[in-house]
Image (cartoon, rainbow, N blue to C red; front, side, top):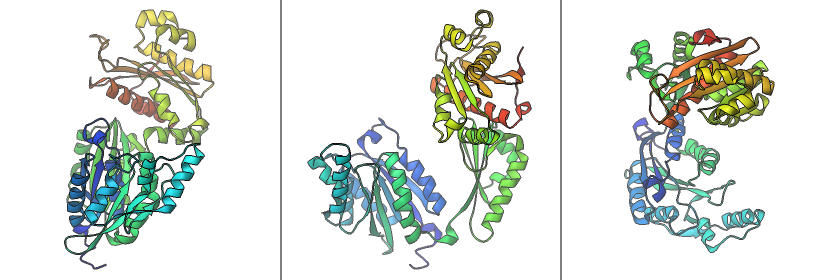
Length: 437
């Protein structure tokens, strides 16, 4: 490949998510953001993410335009067995080639159906059709293989068009096993591949971070800094290229870790629940949770982590006051005197979860997620957290903005995870906790 083709400005990509259900808003596109993040790590900048309906002619025209400009075009979806799955036909039309039957893929589809005690339909034969000259990407999670085709851009230089299935559980392993190695081999220039470092912080907003970071966020600096906030966690990213990039990135991450030491969650892009499970395991500790306003989401976040069974003992969803009393042992007098959303009840819930499960730590959530049920004293967004250990119980009260029931509960789950993590680290003094009265 020529040096001009491999120059950084030309290593751009476009992603096309296909499906009327995406275009109509019935389902969000989960693949575009994931693909963009993964390709960025390879040094391929995604400049556009398109969402198009199940229209073969419109999709073919879009693919033709994108392939003329970008070194890589990736589609997701539209590889199923029904007539509205038009991606393979649109790709062939855009490339000016015919579709060809691929017998190995058809044999794999037949075998997969046989394992499930079924027989494939005539529609499934469509899934063994590929543009002439395509490299087939096997799908060991479903019936829709993907494919990669070579393209020719407007300047005569080659590129790639890849089509992947829509379900993320099929797309992601296929991309990792088949597409990314091909992209690395054919398109990636090692000197242009970025070195990336990350640091996750808890309990600091973007504006506060920007004020503390100073010129770190100047886009002209090296490493280039990026900030992404999600549900209370601030993910910082440092990116550099060229000679000495790793040293520059590591130095910047070390600077940030030192400056925000009391806020650091992890330096490996792990989620709060992943970090908590790992540190519970390292410390040999067990955890149980008691939930009211979060309705099982805290237990769900923990059990989503592989290996959580080594540290997670039990989850109690005690929505009604009488269940708080009968299951967790919360005294009825506390509920009558203070109400369910109160520090004494949160502490009793955490203590009950710990004692009834035999865990080392108990964490609880009780609050007003809305949209109704708030009052002047206990407004929507008020959540009280409890933490119980062998040394006793403490509580933490947070007032989240009234941004909707689901977001409040998501914020509450993140805060509960952070409370447990800071307890495991022996750093509860850094939080605004209150001892049990």
